[in-house]
Amino acid sequence: MASSNKGEATIQAWYMNETDEDQRLPHHCDPPEYVSLDKLAELGVLYWHLDADNYETDEEFNKIRESRGYTYSDLITCCPDKLPNYECKLKSFYEEHIHTDEEIRFLLEGSGYFDVRDNNDRWIRIWVKKGDMIVLPAGIYHRFTMDSDNHTKALRLFVGEPVWTPYNRPQDDHPIRKQYVEAFIEKDQGSHAVEAH
Ligand SMILES: [Fe+2]
Image (cartoon, rainbow, N blue to C red; front, side, top):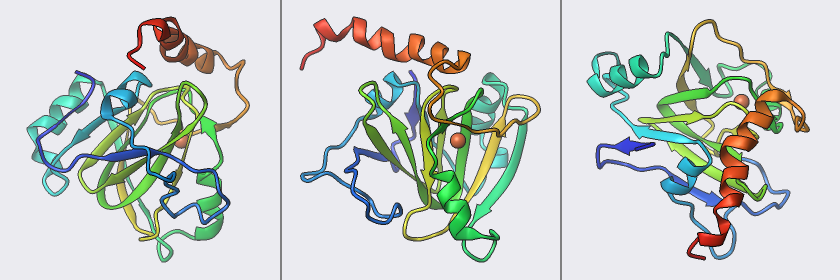
């Protein structure tokens, strides 16, 4: 299983409209076009819903952390009062980019949107809230924005010494991007003929 939850809240994800409205708005298509967790898993995106209030002693969290080798963690709080140059930062998080490692976030408070490109280069918006832990694979094109509540407190995790460097699109010749495409996009194209729709 690529993801699990304890039957509590589950994240919502949907295809985005591409209007110029504020990035913090939901950007639903009309009618809304929701995306399943299975679809996210096909793109390499993992998801768990965990106990945000007692995560330090939470068995499930510690198991995930151990099995995936997440040895590093720190806290990041984003809100207009705590983040200098808030509006500027918001814009920079929203630049489409990749990383050479996984991006792992566990929401302890508030909410926000991770946008990821699907196998046809369409934006999928993933709405993460308190208790949601999400892993974006290395090499996936993505971006982040706050939603209109303007508040996120998240645990950032990493394997070993953290490297947060974003490589803005285009990165199609980057070895990590190539690896991602091979593992998640080309694999998908090969199976199109047998898809149900
Ligand atoms: Fe990122």
